[in-house]
Image (cartoon, rainbow, N blue to C red; front, side):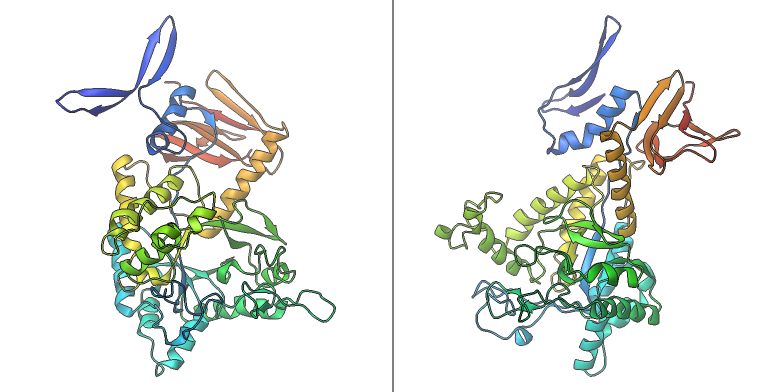
Length: 477
């Protein structure tokens, strides 16, 4: 079923079928585990072989990339002090005078051209108030904003609050690390509902005034603030849920490295996002490599030693070369990690920052590698799916409802001949994959089932009007 050319000529079998005594066995001749690309690339086919293409579940290869802080400047890593001016633990230096990193009009032009050439759309997570502040401080002109607004229809836009403040507890910055400020009685002081709501509303109004199409149901707060932030803020800002409701927000981003599961915030739900290891505070490959070395090098080799004290981390054997480390080590490493998410049926977005599209434009080599590696693995009938934030949120919510119904034993699914029947609790959508030519039974007649992907048809579906179960008619062939 799958083979590979070998040195010296000829081909070797990787996956095959052995048939004897009325039984069929799948033979896999290579080593693998769930984290390795060879398994991820072929696992869908293994399931299709086992089930003859008829099974519960739907699989897609997802990739979305959120570019945070668009229109805002980002602070720059100090390669001498090994910290970022403006951070509480970075002693000395003026962050306002440290040459912050911000896209230019040329960077925006490049972004639009790259999207067109790559066939991939970025999500611009924007701060309109930061753009207005920049313009006021630079003679009333902002070529970057003008270029992005002119190209507004080429991107998807997501509200990142107007000026990107911290929206959780009121921060007490007199200590390192910061702590939540308290009143005289010791109660935590919180950013108010009015301020939260204004930050959300004003940023939407800014976009509407510029002719930018923005979905009010989507939000990314600055640094995911407002949500709980351990260890200082173990609970959400109690004013957050009300402010989300005030503005019609249904999907607010969270950090997958902190909260990988979707959860409710009042009537809204979180959308966990994967942080990409392309840092927000670097504009050049040398800066990126320097900070990477500081984090992933042992104290004996001149690093911070963080990698030695963190059981989830691994230290580099030696510091990377600042001239080659980014292209030779960091890019393939990050592309491999991200592609692993893509091949794992994981719809969670990845997020980076506008600084990664500026100066040496560090994000593009990573994205180019991901897309090239993906397209070398999969045929045109299995494209990358590039969902927007609300669609990811809805997908995760459907999965949670389905998993809960399965765990409670409230799903029944069976096949008799060429008919598949699935029953689930009312309101729970059912994920099904079936061969091309499958049709869904209506009260009268049938209709084509699902959408085409990877040679099959699949969809989240539910019973039609006056029906109690999903019934599919498989192609007789």
